[in-house]
Amino acid sequence: MLGAVFCAWALSTACGDEGGGDGDGNTAGTGGSGGAQLPPGIQVVASNLTAPLAGECMSPANCVGGSGMGCAEVPGGYRVCTFQTPQATMPSSIPNLDECDGSRPCDTGACFNIPVFADGVCGRAAPVSRNVCRTNECTTDEQCGAGRICGPAGFSADEMYGGGTVRLCVTAGCRSNSDCRAGGVCSMVQAGCDLPAADGSQEYLPAQMACVYPNGCTSASNCPQGSVCKVILNEGVCVRASAS
Image (cartoon, rainbow, N blue to C red):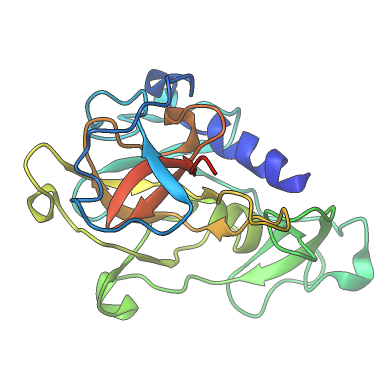
């Protein structure tokens, strides 16, 4: 399943000091739901993140996953690992689908080779790779409107799988630590795949800014096996399906 492939990539791009997702699965004591009603069918479980990180990275050396990684700062000061997709200079394996290549530059923006998913990033169909032209969606937070920020280029799978290394508007439930309760850090909760639905399909969860508390999460690497990292009520928490 391609969803599993994507989730493996999301896990591999996490920082080494976040550790693996081998928690015991006990209910998290984050106050993550604040006593409010969680969506039906899921429960919050403890992560291996005993204290929120001040940032995923201080330099590119802190980012794992091979070449092309960088370290950038999002509004509020949190530093994230970014994937710097190289620009495409050659035709793809299916040139008739390409928008650009070395001999056909983009009118605006830059040319990137990206996978195109017939049924979504977390679906079952294998992607088709082609060259596309991409431009920055924004350069300032103000251009994104209320509740969103202008992320750094390449900060999430949104760029890797659909946008190339460009700046995109992303949801932001917080902009600094002061927007969180005591002990919380305004963090980037990385993109991932949601828990499987009844038909086995998985929804893609875009990266977004949210508050993270002890036993919360910023990526799937913080969560026990069988759970995912998801933003619920503006908090990054590990969730799994409730016992039936």
